[in-house]
Structure formats: C-alpha cells, structure tokens
Image (cartoon, rainbow over all chains, first blue to last red; front, top):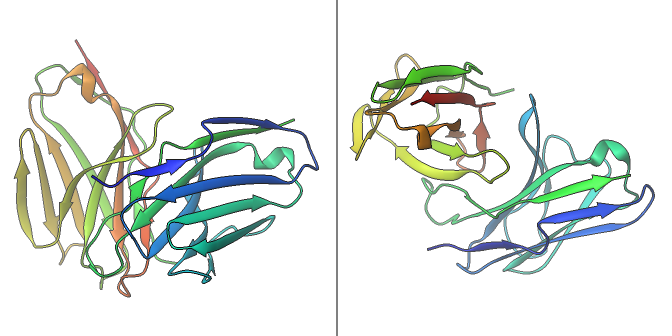
Length: 114
Length: 111
C-alpha cells in the first residue's frame, strides 16, 4: 500500500509566522500535490510537482511556495501565515508512469492561524 | 476551466436502501474517473476507479460511466450507517497531468 505521511496532524501558528508543512511518500511516485480543503469550496490545488526540483502552480498559489529537493519529500511553505490560510491541508502523490493512476492522500494537516 | 459537478446533498437514505450519487464533467477528453470517500475530519480514500463505458462492480459499490453523456455515477447497495460520508468524484484531465475534483456529495444513511 502507498503511504503518504504528513508530519503534523494539527498545527497552531501565529499571524506572520513562516510555516512549513512536510509530506513524505514511500512509493517512488514522480508526482506530488498540495491541496487545501475548506467547507463549501472543495479541494483546491495549491501546487504540484512532476519530479524533483520541478514545481507548477495550481489554482491558488498565492501566499504559498513549495520545495522538492528529494523525490519522496514535498514541502509546502507559508511565507507569512495569515488567518485566511486556516484550513485543512492535504498532500497527495501519484504514479506518473501510469496515466490512469489515482491520487493517494496523506492524513491531512489541520492548520489554525491566530 | 474544466469542471466536475456534483449535487452537494445531503442525500438521505434509510439503512438497506440503494444510494445513487451522480457526477458530470466538462472535459470530453477525460479518460479516467475515480470515486473517493471522505469521513468528517479525515482525508479522502479511493473506493472505485473506472475507465471504460459501462458498469464496474466491487462488493456493494458499482461505478457507472457514460462518456457520451459525460456522466459518471456511484451506486451503493444495502447502504449502512457507516457509509455516511462525503463522496468526491474526480476526473483525470485529457493531458493526464492532474485530477479535477467535484465538491462532493454528502450521504447520510439512517438506521
């Protein structure tokens, strides 16, 4: 089974702090994704990465950056946290080699910015 | 903007009934379709995938795909209270690079 691990289940941060959300997958997947999920808005794609050191903006990249220095790890960075970034953050990975492959999600990080 | 549409619900069914969840998509070139289940406060988990027109059955779940109508559905037979969750429909875009999600349908099964 694919295992996608997010480093924190719950985080509370203050406005203006720099926040790092870490995600690790153990299946050698090329593709990794960061989503946020808010009530009524569904899953919204923040950033994704096709491979090491590659990144692409999703639908809502503003206020976020990412880092992928190793294939198994994809980090989401909130440069200066704001209260409107309070949300559930979901990391996912996917096998690019199989065009039909689904996303496999981590357990999520519920971030509260006060 | 490619879209995936689902009724938000809630869809309420009694225990033992069939629950029918529907999804339409706008990208006619889409080839792969998925259903995820998400319990409150948890992350989505994959329950079904379907790639060809017709029906695909897995236990109490049946996925149905009609590419001409750009329509995919999920049937849950003998619904149980444990099936109460939000069900997300997802579609791979024509380029095969990203999954597009609907906003989900909330299902409530009463005992």
